[in-house]
Image (cartoon, rainbow, N blue to C red; front, top):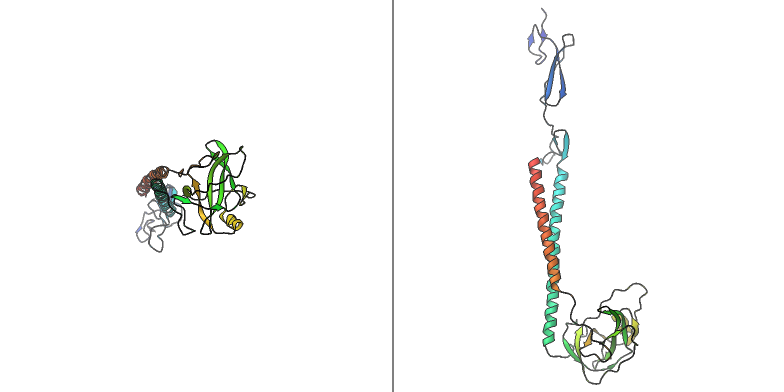
Length: 294
């Protein structure tokens, strides 16, 4: 009787062996069928299991991990998680920035309150020293025509702020803020008294203008430009203005206390801090879920 080789192991022969074929209909399930008239061939039964791609050259894990029928990219998940951690650190940086702004503005308010209680003194000798809200006493003569700053709102009423350039004994020029005037009131030059003027040394009014705005050194202007004023006067211009404590009639005193409050910046810092903590909790939860599904 002729013998045939074993279909599973070709080196083992059996006289009653018959060729068989292997059919795989579903993952993890093999069906063995008998084919007595087929040709002899080698069959191999493979265990159905999730396939994994080969590891990379650096040994840092597989490029893809196959879980069931779906392909889950591992490296893009790590990148997205790192991006979330960086995003979670951004609110803490913003919180520190807002806290620093609150501290700086609290320092300005503290210096303003300290200057209110201090007696009035003279202007510093340095012409470029920045104003510090101190109370000063100045004396001099008018160095040019008055200046009216338009679009100055006192509460809900529109008006102008009137300034008068004053020449000092050291040859420099400083702007004296006389006060506020309603927009419908006539603009006229007000004579300054010969006695020394007492006021608060303040920064120049900050104003953002559009192209085509009026920027002049006399008359009605939309903004006060130090370079334009110095060029028109032909003399050194002092930094800042002196706002009179007692403006002449019919002008009203313009508020000199800084309008910003440091508590607002502290509240912003607390909000950013809470947002950062929430993002950190979310990143930790996503990281744990990723480790459990790996």
